[in-house]
Amino acid sequence: MARVSQRRSGRLRGATIVIIAAMLPVVIGGLALSVDTAVIATARAQLSTVADAAALAGARKALDAGRFEEAQALLGPLAKEHPGNAQITSLQTIIARLRASVKATAAEDALWAARRDYRHDPAAAVARLAALDVDGLPEPLARQVFGQWARACRRRCERDGTGDALRYAPRVGRGAVLIRRTPDEPYVVLSAIGMGDVWAAGTVVSERTVRCARPLSNC
Image (cartoon, rainbow, N blue to C red; front, side):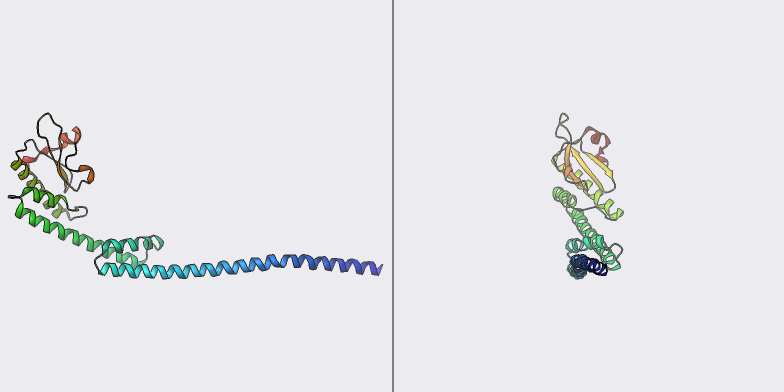
């Protein structure tokens, strides 16, 4: 009886050893997988930090060189990944201010040239002002640019003998001058400022736009 108990005990211990032996690779494999995942996560975080630092340095370099679009392109992904980061926010604020300053300076230069030239070369003055990016200009400057553009358009129409010219101005500093060659023809765009590509010269406008427009001669 004792021998039987010993044999049973031995078989149980053997079975236990077999079960444990079978489990060891799983446990060890799981441990190894856990370690590998942690190492990979750490490496990725380090690489991300290095990449972010490089992108931030590149943005500063581009900003110093006046390449605002490049600087903003580098900062955009960083701002999404690190919202509220003081360095990134500061650089974005600087970029916005510098871009606004450059845009305003370009508008002032074009305005000065248009005032000088519009009497003897109104077409050139119109083209120069219409080419400006007026989005975000200070309102007083935007009004001056628009007013001078409208006067240059009127001068051009007078030179060309174009009657019935209209001025459509849906927003401050933005609008279009509309003309038609004969009373039977539809109105088309002569020039537009701050209105986008859909208002290209020669584009036929709707009757609703015509109804909302005012005579160019009144400006």
